Each structure stands twice: as C-alpha cells, then as structure tokens.
Image 1 (cartoon, rainbow, N blue to C red):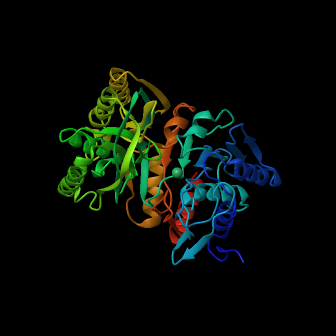
Image 2: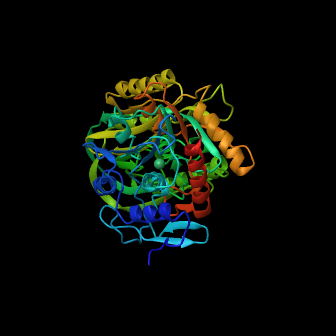
Image 3: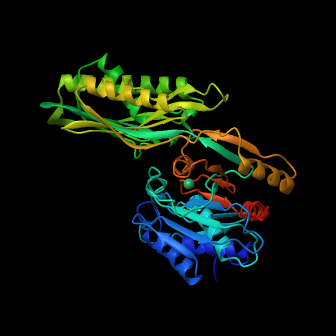
Amino acid sequence: MKVLEGLQPASVFKFFEEICDIPHISYHEKEISDYCVAFAKERGLYCEQDDHYNVIIIKEAAPGYEDVEPIIIQGHLDMVGDKLPTCPIDMEKEPIKIMVDGDYITADGTTLGGDDGIAVAYGLALLDSKDIPHPRLEVVLTVCEEVGLEGATAINLDTCKAKRLLNIDSEAEGVFTAGCAGGMRVDCHIPVETEVKSGVLCEVKTQGLLGGHSGIEIHKGRVNGNVYMGRFLLTLKSKMAFGIVSMAGGVKDNVIPKNANATFLVEEAEVENVKAAVEEMNRQLKAEYGVADPDAELVLEVSGVRECKVLSECSKEKVLTALNVMPNGVQAMSQDLPGLVETSLNMGVMKIDEIEMQVSFALRSSVVTAKEYLAAKVKQMTEMLGGVATYHGDYPAWPYARESKLRDLCLKIYEEQYGEKAEVEIIHAGLECGILSGKIPELDCISMGPNMFDVHTPDEKISISSIARVWEFIKSVLAEK
Ligand SMILES: [Zn+2]
C-alpha cells in the first residue's frame, strides 16, 4: 500500500511518491533524471537530457490549443539533504520515508524534498494527462538548484518555443513571486603563519543560535556565529595575551552559521579571566540579541596545558581584522519597495588552520552594481590582509517587469478561484527565473507553489489540500485561450 494512495489529485500524488522513492539530493540527480527520461519515452514524448542531467520534456498542444502561446512549466530535480542526527538514512543512496500527518506530508527524520519534488510531480502529471486542455507544454527540470543554480546556468533552452514560464518553486499559496535578487559567492584565502607556544588550551563554542537562510532571514538580526566568535576574541585581546590554535564555523556560504568554535592557548593564571570574559559576552549577547536570537550563547571548555602551533601575532591580527571588519549582514534596504532587503552578505563558512584562513561569503543584491561594489570591498579587504579573493556562481537578478501578461493572467485566475486577491512579492533569495530569463529574450516569468513549511530542514512539510488547490489553479492557467 502506497502512503499517498487515495489522496486527490491521484496522479500528482502518485508521481510525488515515486519521486520521494528515488534519492535525489543535489549532485546526485542522475537516477531521478533517468526516471523522467524513461517516463517521457514510455509516452512517446520528445525529451532531452544534457550532460548535467537537466531534462526537458515537450508535449504538443491539446486539440484546439494549437494557436495558444506555449508555456514552460519549470522546477528543479534536486533537494536539500538534511536529517536529524539520529536518522540512519543515507540520503545519497536510500529513499526517504514519507508519512501523512493530518493535512501534511512529511518525511521521517529527513527533509521531504517537497521543494522541489512537487514541481516535478505537477509537470509529470500534466504530461501524463489525456484530458487536460493545454497549449504546447515545455517541462524544464533542472539539477543543482540548491547549490547555486548550477543546472539552470548550464541548460540550453534552444528547443523551447515558449516566451512565458511558470516556475513552481515558491512556498506560499497566494503569494506570487515576480522578481528576485542576484547573487554570487566570494571565497577568501588569507595565508597565516604559526609559532610553537605552550599554555592552557581553551575552546569556546557558540550554542543555541537560530541560523537560517541568508536570502530569507538575513534581515532578522540573528547572530552570525563566525562574526561573533571574532568579536569574542577581539574583546579577549583587550584583556590578555592568547594564541589562536584553530577556528571554524558554518556549513554553507548561504546559511547563517549557527556553530562556530575557536581554540586558543592562554597562561594558566588567565583561565579565570577567560571564564569571566565568556560570561560577560553572554550578558552582552542577551542584551543585544535577546529578541532576535534568544538562546544564543558561548560555552567554554578548558583542557590541560599543551604545547602546540598557534598563529603568529601578525596572523592573529589579520584574522581578528577579517572577522570583525569585513562587512556582514544587510548592507542596504530597497529604495523602491519598503521592507525588501536590497543588498546583503553572509559570512557563511570560516576555517583557520596552520596555513590559511578561508572565508566564504554569499552576496545578494537586486542591484547589479551594488553587488559588484560589495564584492570589490571584500576583495580589497582580503588583499589588504595579504590574501586572494575569488568570485564564483554569479547569477543575475530577476528584475520586476512592470508589464507581465502571465502575471496578470495568474492574478485574474487566482481571484476567480479563491475569491480574493493574491499578493505579488519580490524576494531577496535567488530563483532560477533570473538565469532562465537570460536565455530566452523577453521571457515572461512568475513563480508560485503550494504551502510548504520549514523547507531545507528535517521538519519540512507540505500541505495536501494546498497541493490540490494549486493543481486546479495550474489547470485553469493552461485552459486559458
Ligand atoms: Zn527550491
């Protein structure tokens, strides 16, 4: 017995469950990509699969719809693989276990991949249908969206005839996304030198930080673990001599780092003062971040006396400068749209060993020149510290179009179906629409999707009733002549 059997619309849930049965985290999309190709072959549909495993499947217009403008239905094949520490599933190789809980589908101990499996399920259900009226359908499914929009960057859309694109990668029913920020990653490498010293080994770690997505949550005033660790050491410098052994923090450039740590040596007589400094920083944390990040704190572990390599004083100065003076967080708010972050960056990953300090930033802006200037600032600071900064994964913003026939159509149909007006928003996170717009001149895009919660976490869930309503909505958009 299938878990989703009996749910309506049956075909959407059937394909969604089949997708959940195939492991498909980023960089491991071959199997799901091949599944889509086999699906197309079985139905005699035109299909393209490129070397990256991006897939395009085309279905000609239903009778009577030959003259209606073709449309691209688009989503991504990959999902974020996150799980609870206790979950035994190997997400690269083993399927997740889905469950129904009231109106929600969720996965046991892992991310669900409703982001963006539901787009794939809708796409396949449309291609599979025999009785849904539609114009020429071009279903475009990309890989590696979650790791920097890599599939969208690489895909060739020459076979597509459509000039309009419905991206199904938004997470709030009734909110249509009509623009997003561009972004890039900046990696900094700053060489360091070490010397051998002895002293009491102390380790300070962050604990209880909320973290979050650097596009969606950057304005929430949460603690960045890496930056805060730098701040702690800067404070410590005013109180005592110490030698940095190592530092590390963060997991991805676009995730606000929750966990950061620093190990350092101090003289035995200073241990009590280190404890007092941690307590003082925790009081400051509460005072400054008590609302935005209420459980954030530093914890100290003191080990015995050690002799080991620590950063030279000159290298320590460089590290403290990088962590405390490099820009981080919101840099500018939009002048056009109140409340929208225009430009930001996140010091996502930091690591210091005997050879170098590595720092990776995710930069975002809806203004190209503001993004370029911010990248240049980070580069300038890195070079001042004797290091090298490199740029990666640059993707363009998706600018809001003053006129959009597809947006007008969606808003009209939404109001007819729901009896209320939908919202239109521009977001600070990245979407594939920006990149894909660059490949088809004057492409008219909109992004939407059913209600999902806690995406990219093991608590991810998707609403069954919302999936059904959005399915009706998509069919109405396609039925329009
Ligand atoms: Zn997504």
